[in-house]
Length: 422
Image (cartoon, rainbow, N blue to C red; front, top):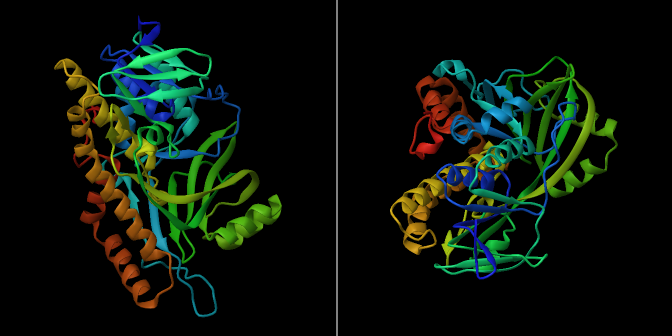
């Protein structure tokens, strides 16, 4: 950091110290680029005896490699992770009397052993991932972390942007990166508009204690009102936990939130597939609306967006954070190359390379999740027959299943080098 006309000057100012913002800071800091990271809240210090947080993510193989390359994975592993080796997907089918079918010709099972991998990915609490990244960036001499910090004002230009904090301190930089989430202040201040669509469903997440020990499978059963999903979590002090995710209509989510803990467990047990382990206790539940957002531009006037500030997708396949990390890896690589070439990091030509590299892939993933959402969130008989036939064929076609696994994990496909194994 240097001081210019009373302001503290960095090359890059990152608004948002969550998973994506901290990852970008680590990648740039490793190359000695001067970076300042600002966030409103400090994450709570980790304690191994604490119950699992409500917000978790399924980190892909590519995201794991990215975090390893940032020297953050070692810190994450020292806290806790839960590998999952199998993933099952099917649509719930019922007999005329209402009983669910025992056999599932429409189920597709993904198993890591079929592609000679130990696991498909890891379920990790968002706070754990963020703390691992913060520990990594704190070891970098050229990165400054300002947290808690409240931003009073921002101004952007391709040559010199600035932010002022509520305590009066001013910071300038050649580039401002908005990694400040779906309601991005950077996006709003830069005047970048959104393509915004509400989904008809909401998403409830609950952390439960389960019987039978830690699980190694995650599954998702489609229903006409939304999927019912199960995510394994690590054991804590000899007790096993899981995250259950329940997509449903807003009025049903509202009803579920009003139930007592035992009433909720009873409803969960009655409704979810028989694969659901016995529920010992409900520890926490919450819900959030589902919306698709996509910025019409990824950069403007020396400001650039990454992660949820640029796009949010339907969380059906849990790809939101993985897309965010791909943004982070791609943006960091482009900025590092530009820095080495002596280009201004806020230059529209530099930032245009990032948008060109990421927009199409993000749009494709958003459209794919939309297609799944619209195809399965109904009870239209011809469509139901076609989609279940497709699921059954997919499950019986091993080469196709293997290719889907490799792509979803980030083993194949066009990925930034920072997200590849070194």
